[in-house]
Length: 432
Image (cartoon, rainbow, N blue to C red):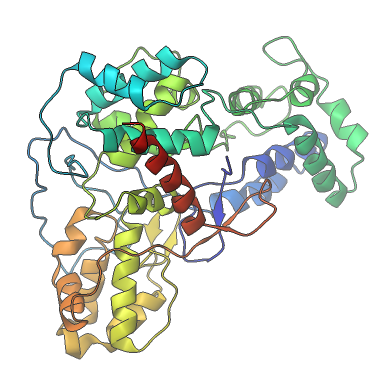
């Protein structure tokens, strides 16, 4: 497991915000009551400036082919958030004969690795998620989800992070040093008891899993007044569970598609459970139509954002026409807090130079680029003309993005992630 991840390029919309960084960012504030609001704003700014894509709007599938989407009018405001239209589910291979839920359970039992803990629980959670999300029961789809689970959590419903408490305190000490505060002073400040009866210091000392870390943050946020922290401090942990699902995605998903299970608290808490994590992870990986010939591009999208592989191929076609060498990162516009910025990206500037060849004005180019995160972008005049002029090259390409995290000690990329997951996917298929 390598999450949380952050991208190197400024134009990217990071999928993850480093969890540990914010844990040790918040603690020194306890000791500076007068400066608390100012310091907190500055400390949280770094995470707030790392935008996360808006959650998609999802509606039940009613057809096997996505409906055409008309391009947005030229007057579409630049500040409008990119919200996905209703999506449908299409299998990665030709449709198979419909099978029953019992037959699906037998299929999953055959596909699961031989030795995993809570085998029946994983089997039931997978089939239940597919049933609720109306995903076809196919070996390809089941293995895709299994491959991501194995990569992200090694089949742990609540993934552990070895030495998590020590990692957190080390980072707390480094941050406290910047304010000339001894670590012992910070630890003393957190000796106050938390809602579960243990002190915050003890809980950090014994941190083992992401769910425990999330619980600490939830209590810190709710206990802000007593700890002299700002009232509206939100939990900064943005991903979690066995598939490392975005909290924002999950919260948006339940607004559009009814959550099928009994909730034990917030949606945020659900993604840290095995059942909820599998459900939301399956949704973000499979519950959208992807125009790819191989599953590996879905895995890249899971890491880089939906349609990143399609958009990277579009950037490659633009490079060919413009004689450019822009990075194929899958983002066609620049973003801030999930919204497209008025400042043109490298891709948009290259397209503007090609305006006469593609017979589109700057406004029309922007209009079509605003659809880059949804299915309908492939139906726009911009997309179709660029590929036509470029000689109709491949419409799928691996996004080139560097990954960074406090736990990553070597160079890793989206391509590395996708290939690792694809290897697990192929192994799973061999069991069928």
